Image (cartoon, rainbow, N blue to C red; front, side):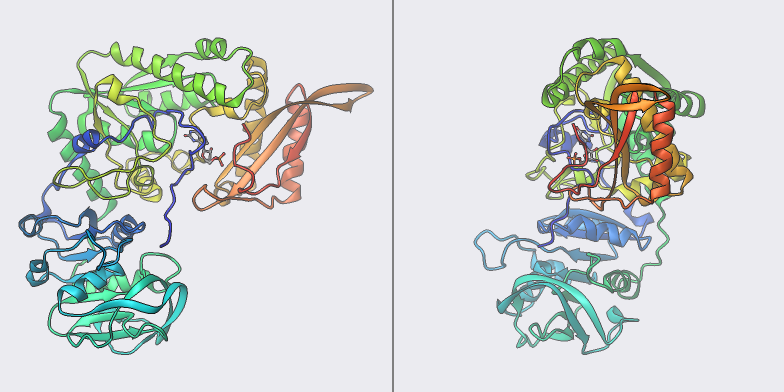
Length: 552
Ligand code: XMP
């Protein structure tokens, strides 16, 4: 099974940020239930979740086809499905074998609804088993890329080459002797790599079309949605914004909502949606902890006070953080202090806002869930992402999480649609503890200024060289080391800046960026000339693992 990893690896220590402040309890998920606004107005595909790691990725690939798609529990009732009126159903993969005791199943009546169904991996085995086929352990487990041939033409395969690479990940497979199914694609070891029922609109794929390793996966999903289910693909990210706006208005009524701003993309998008939904009923809190990048507080003010005219509370807690961090050099203790003080400061400010009942935050799908419990029925078991901290439960707010089904790039598209700038939307991630994890050794105002200036130069030079968007994260680190240098006729004994720039898909693993030497040269010259107290610049050429992205 392909592991789908979080957009940001925050496993080291959960420091609450405005974007990620809460523990996903079952109760909070129930609270965040938003339901469907008006399914009849919109083409809808439902993915029934059987616990596969890539279930939400299927939903997202369908949304890429401009058809609204949402993950739902696998045991959603037939009545509810009818009511939601989807154009198609996709049964996701899952870790179980259909023969396991307690393995999740579907109501066989599902296949008689006349709604086109696509089963993927476990979902295919379920469909075939329910319709009279036999599932048996394959002669050998198949895992990884394999070549698959088209053996029978069908609208599902429209535009596909005769042979294509697919990604397999299974032990069991459907027995080719299953008379009610016709093989559409086959691999040397799997004669039923893609199948269609002989009379019902039921399809199965033994491989995973949602992962990029399946070269024509998007085409197959597009064919299912458009050729088989007949969707036109008129859904836009703006429809999602409208859907959220309507449901937030209905839920919030006349109450006040607090939104914690971190300066990052996720919380900014949440605030922009809320502003659109409830305008003056929104209060934003931005805690200036003195560990921010240069100009960050001003940018937030400009965005959320001048552009979106929100009730913005900028809490200047710089001195409080610095005094609590005075003399602390251990990175774990720094993180704990920063997290604790953040909560205290945030709570105090939140308490000063009368009538606040809700707290909005930018939890994204990769931060949250294993199993889709976000629609209907009692909340299922939820695996909280290890980054997620524990604030709102204590604060007693009800949660609003408009992004919890979405992936980062969908959130970026939403941000642009909502009028946020490209610069903000494409901003590299910045950790909750901020410069606190990049200023190694003691955190003093003077050392933080040094780091902030160097960091600004790194980012300016990357932007000027057109490299910022080619790198997923870049920054300066101030080392707790002094080294000898010579400036003019004098000997210097000053600090060292390390420059870090990485390329990564998921922040779980990362490669150091092969930075052009002229860019490195400009960064180094500028830092040494412009930042007082730094006489040496080094470039970090370590990958993750074994190193991490942050130095701490
Ligand atoms: P590491 O250093 O573990 O970082 O390779 C992976 C990603 O996580 C970010 N990071 C954090 N983000 N709170 C955050 O919001 C944190 O406490 C935290 N620690 C690390 C880091 O910047 C990188 O993107």
